Length: 128
Image (cartoon, rainbow, N blue to C red; front, side, top):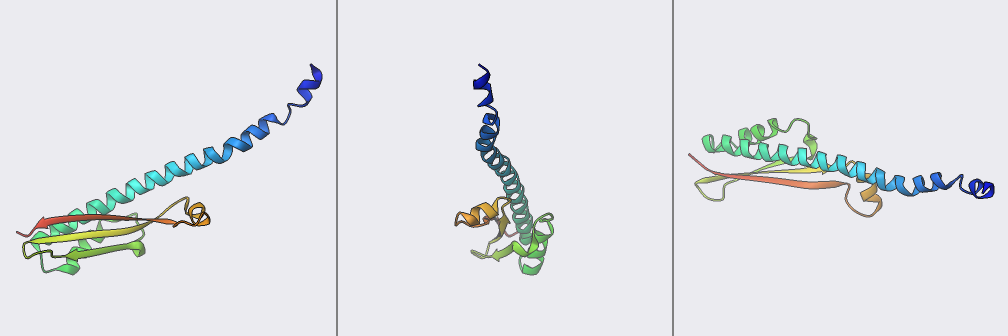
């Protein structure tokens, strides 16, 4: 009995070493998911508010873009793009594109993928 206990001293360490990377990926993935949900919700609201401004001021493209960008606090403004389009004479379409940097981006780029996720939200409304 005594001899068997001596050989089991490192068993806990080996089990932890096998589980730790999986647990770490689960935690980091949860953080990334929460960040992506926040970013997508933010750009969705920005596109909608830009389109709402655009139905009242349809010729003010700079104002539409500024209105949409003003609602994207907390996001990296250099990775944000606002596109204003007029599909026909009665509608305005505001598209907000954002390259969301992933918290696990270093792992994604090491595996050959992108370190950011491109999010896009579009809102189309009729001009009043």
